[in-house]
Each structure stands twice: as C-alpha cells, then as structure tokens.
Picture 1: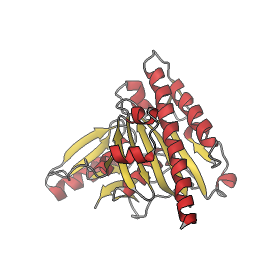
Picture 2: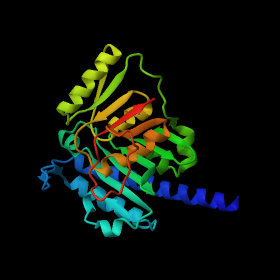
Picture 3: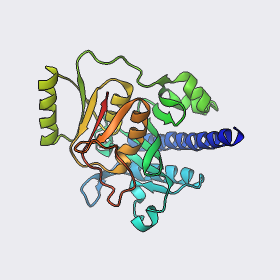
Picture 4: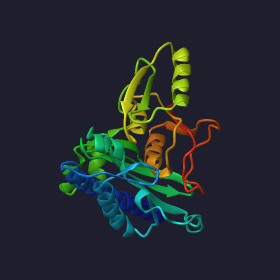
Length: 277
C-alpha cells in the first residue's frame, strides 16, 4: 500500500508541475497576444510567432526538472533511434492553434501529455483567453476548471482543482446529434463523413472550434463526434486524447477503429474520429 501511495503521489506531483508550466506558458502567450506581434512561417507554411517560442521555453524548462524526456513541436529534432527507447515522456504542443492566435479569436491552447508505453495516459489543455483548464488524472477521471490561474496563484494544488472543477462529461447529451468541426481545416473527406451522419441522424447540429478545443468539446459532452480527415501531428492530439478517453469518449483510427498511439516512427497522425458512445 505504501508503494502504491508513493507512486500516486509521484504521478500527481508530475501533473501539478505540468499544470503550472502550462499556466505560466499561457501568461507568456497572452503578453505576446496583446502586442502587435509579427508572424513568420515554417517550411510547411504553418505560422510561427514569438508566443510559440516563449511558451516552448517555459514548458521545456519546467518539465526538464521532472527527469522525463520531452518531445515538443518546437523542439522536435530528436531521432527515432533515441525516442524508441522512451517508455515514458512528455509530448508537448506549446501553442496549439497558432492560426487562431494570429486571427485573435482566442481559440488556442497549451497542450501537455504524459505518454506511457506509447499511449497518452494523462493530459493537460490550458486555454489562456478564458483561463480554463482541461485535464485528467489516471486515478480520478477528466476535469474542467474555470479561473484556474487564481486557484494556482493562491497556492492551490490538485485537491483544490478537483474540488472547484467539473468532472467530464459535464453537460447533458445534446438533443440533436452534434458534430464539432475545425475552424481552419475542412477537407472533402470530412464533408463526406458529415453528409453520411446527416443521413443517419436526420439532421445535425454543428460547433466550430479551433485547436484541441474540438476534442475538449467531445470530452465535455457538448458534441457527439469530431471527425478529422486532414493532417495532424501527435502533439496536436495526445493531451486531448487522454482527457477524452478519461471522460468516456474514444479516439480511434478512422479506418481500423484502433486507439491512436504515440511515438511512431512518423509522428503524423492517421485520420481519426473522436466520439462518445
């Protein structure tokens, strides 16, 4: 029993450190957000801002102290030969939804996942603009906490977050079958899938969100399904997957139905579906 408690306490300490890192990164992101920031582009034409880099530095520095390896979008140059030896590591997107950040619509997040044996076990998604936190614990389900910065600034820990948060799913199932879609990415294949759902359910309701908030909508119970038939990377989805699965939803390969895994040779995700039921 003592060993079990020690292990649980150690895991909780890791998650608390990661939550604090996400909130600190969110503060740095907001400082840039409130300025007339410039935008550059990566080789794949995706946008990059000072906020991405500042968030990466903060999260990396904090998580480095935990002793676990770190794979981050803004520091991804780690060979497969090294990564394949990792049994446990952090998978990080320091600013998910940079396109939404550039549009200034508030729909961007800091994503941190703890990967164990190739699957996301625990996840953190911090949403800086409304100051909301989605997270899950291996032994305590999935949660949403509003006004999280003040709780942490007052010295709060996981007990306070669980006490003040809402367990997911936290809303009743929508009366009409509801699909959450990408605000910036809609492929023809996604359109076809949605058309099939319309036939099956006799109509649909839609929610449009950016970044990993789409997965959070399913975890929260606001949407029944999120289909993604367009490119994403492991760091885009791992934290959301952990939270969604802890809420009772599934995150599966669109064709095989298998659970998504992490730390593949190619870090590109297959097409996938997040759904309840």
